[in-house]
Length: 434
View 1 (cartoon, one colour):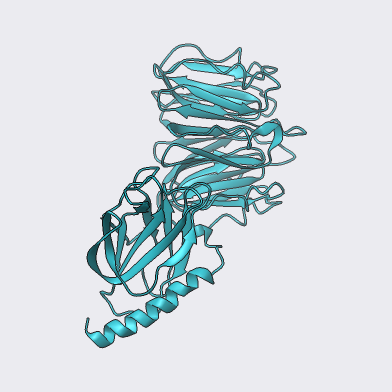
View 2 (tube, one colour):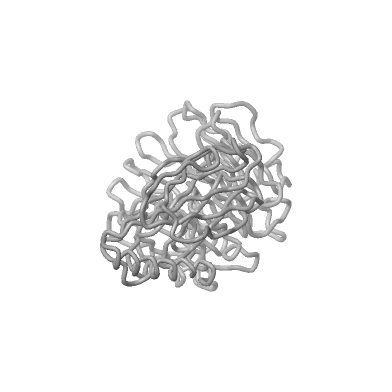
């Protein structure tokens, strides 16, 4: 790039990055969690921002998500403390959100720790929290209508909570199960041969109409409707409610996951696109996101959540300098194509700390506060303050007119008393315009 091109690129880039402060932060589709449907308890607008999530679960009027560091965030209706009592700390590996169609909704949640022990919180009217089994060695948890299930490492099942329809007492014995699912009043377990065991409430054929045979790879239990995925990626549904039918499961093959909610259902195709069907009173179906790249779906009472994979052309150039939470992590999301929406996401920084984002069109490493600053700065750093979680999320739009091959370097410097000279550095990011 000659000096004239570099000067033009610099002006365009400064203009584009000033938009960091002007763009509304509504590009949820560029981030990891997308929510839609009923929003009376902020199930949708309360969706956490950021792109470091690995799993989502939707309950009756709340949702739970697992971050990459094993910490948990909950949002939505806070009945019985199902949001405010979310456990702190890291090291969790799976979450589950329960639902029960009652007033107030008897919602509870479960989380699995790395050692296989279980934490439960929220409504405890039927022992769905207080009767949680102790010990380690569990590999999966599922939460339904005031009912909880857990799978042990030997493939045996533990169940506790509401037992009016023998959801607990009829739990199958033995080992060799590979997945469990809990619905409004019924439950399922998948055997190693792909056959399905079902028990509990059967007023609409949720149990008695369970398909026989083997070759199933996943089961999902909704309020009444039930779904199963065959090994060829086709879907079987049964147990529909006559007043609120949720029939109409998509035909064909190539589906990779199913989710059954209160009155609607979801399926994920192999290309990462979503199909929704059932009741559409709150946009449960019509507001399902378009596009591909989704990796997981979960259906709640009248809302849904989905996890979208990162699509990024940004690469990690290293040179982080540790602070109080270790090395601050800077991740970039987006394609760097002209006019595209991109996001810089800083995590693991000091809490509520002043931070400056250094930007450059080339790299000229220089010593800085005991570490190395990689970008050759083109302007004064953009100043910001980290959140109470030690995070900063900056969306921006790549400007038009940048020459192909233009480099963009970015790196945060964060005030941090625990750092060598009072300033921690994130890793540097490098993006190259296509």
